[in-house]
Image (cartoon, rainbow, N blue to C red; front, side, top):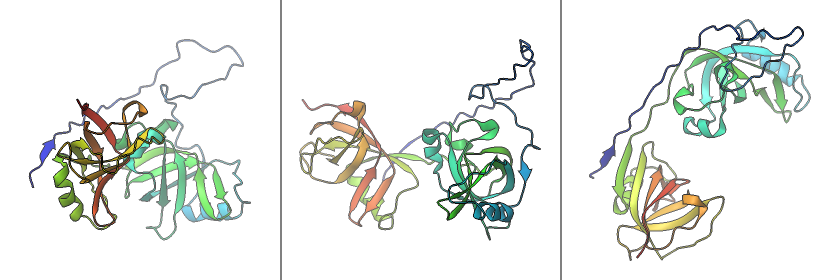
Length: 275
């Protein structure tokens, strides 16, 4: 199967923040400091009560449901699960993952966690994957009385980083999507991203829009059949894409129910409108 590979160039920018004196000395008694994403504030590594994962779990279990500690704690360990997919981090601005300091025997969830210096995540490449060793800081809670969590903390430091790998992106036609889907388990989704080119079909068409998304079928022919499904994909300006339009749908292909190749929640680009 021929595939035209879209070459992705990753530009890695390293920004170092040095120690700078404040241009103006605050007036006596003025200790206000605004924490924002454009002015990272370094929190010393000694800030927070150092505890183990097991101790954190014990503290959480002693709390009432959804009670949050007044004390700030600090836990070091390895990431054992990524609840937030790296590609979703720039959208949510924070991540949720599980942390262990005993090889995964016990884990604590680090919920809605910000990046180093309490800044937001803006790049999927900044997300520490399973195996990364790091330290997090924040309050503890007993979520719904059943789940020990460090809630809305942030990463203090990263001692070793396992970074995401940018997937290859392949440009294919609609008639190639069943081949890709057949190589996946039923319900499975491709690791690589695909740009599927084709025409919006009359069969199965609906102009319904939900949250800026539309579902339609595609084929390589203008008046073809239902070959590939764009399932609730983001359409330009949140407006229905008409029948006969030539489009490109970008996303990961799923083998839906064993016989339908589809991209779910992908992005639609209109190449040309019907004459």
